[in-house]
Image (cartoon, rainbow, N blue to C red; front, side, top):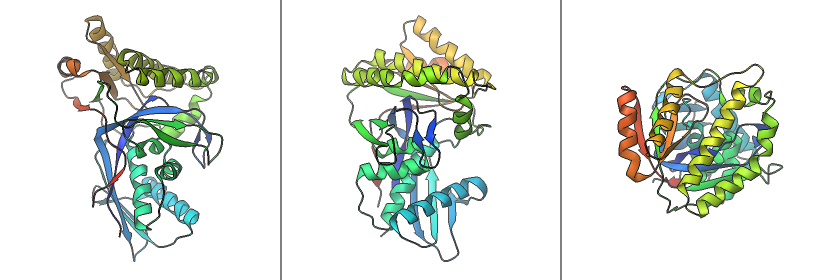
Length: 320
């Protein structure tokens, strides 16, 4: 019997930003993420007698977003030699396409719902492969806590695994929603354009070093080291965007103001660090004792910003 599957979104602390294979969504670099408790997607698949349908937040979708879902489901059906028209019902508790990694929870939940509907007995490792085919970052949302997506060299070797699903680190992520508009340049488009930067290959060459340093920081429970590395890696990614040919950015004026505010808070002795994905919104990493001060500071500067305090979220699960 089909079940509703929940997957939580994740934020990469070491970024994935470039594909070695578009069809299989194989990455050019390994990445490491934090799964978040406050942002998630619930998805259920049922049989349809009137063709394929995709409902997001109770509204039937058409166009590119629906086609992406249908193309993905057909790909999975071919893999498992199953058939049938499907009706997909998803509820997304993540701002879509605004740089908060909505696709990570969306396609992880969709992969889980597909396996539930067809009663497929798959391991979480196998589920990670399947989620990757829909969205690269979704491979990491199969797991809670900290997850690593190893780039691998082919379909069989590129998957995510749990680094630490129940971390003891005092780590909070404040999601600062500065802009609710969908981004003008998709992540896929941005990844392709970024590779024209003269600094892309040097950044790629640093990936193993930065991954090793981040894993060490987590194992040593070193918040400062984690924050510094996350901020550096995000800054490198966006510097590559700016130096692409032609250059581009996901930043808005408020994004720059937020970056400056993080620096000002650190100068005042309030330890915090930023990370930014493909969008204008900023995520601030801090410890519990500084959550209130950081929140108050951002609320005083950004009067209309929505701020959500997130910590570690769980891996994929069935709700019913």
